[in-house]
Amino acid sequence: MWTDRTAIMWHRRRDLSRVKKQIRNYGLVRTLASHQYPELRVPTHTAVALFPPIVIAAFGFFFWGLSNEGLAWPEFWDISLSTVPMGLPRLGVHTLPTLILLYNLIAWYGSWKGNSPSKTKKTIFLSSIATYTLHWNYGMGVLTGWIRILRGKSGLQIDDRKR
Image (tube, rainbow, N blue to C red; front, top):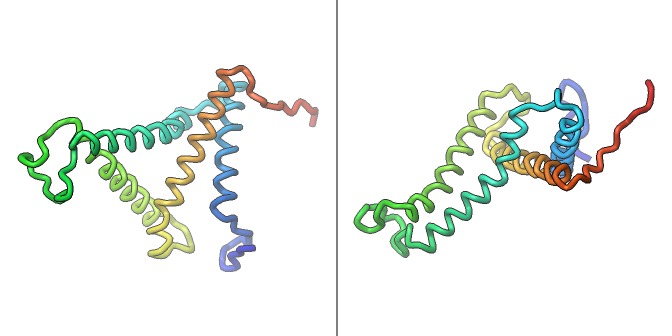
């Protein structure tokens, strides 16, 4: 059991695997609930749902670029236009590393500017991994919710008890 006794409110820390399950379930439930109650819909939930397909497409584009000579091998550091001409294969190879770099820079900046009481160089560095994991799982939860809605089997159980 992980605890943080230096925090303002003492609480148990969950490991990343439990947080992944929770955030995926939250994305699923939020999507199903917003289908039932349209006032809960927020555009940012749709944006996060696009994260997994964008990542998969970027990896696919990267490997397509590799297989179509978008990278000089074994002299992959040679980025001159005479070695690898400008075109879609080259763009495919360069898109994934560029997106990874931008994503990490944004996550590191957000972590650095945040007001966490336990902020260290290590937590700032690792924040991009946690952020990626949470974006991926929330997006997968939302996508799972959309699939359930499209199939007509949402599985949403409404609490209709009078309180």
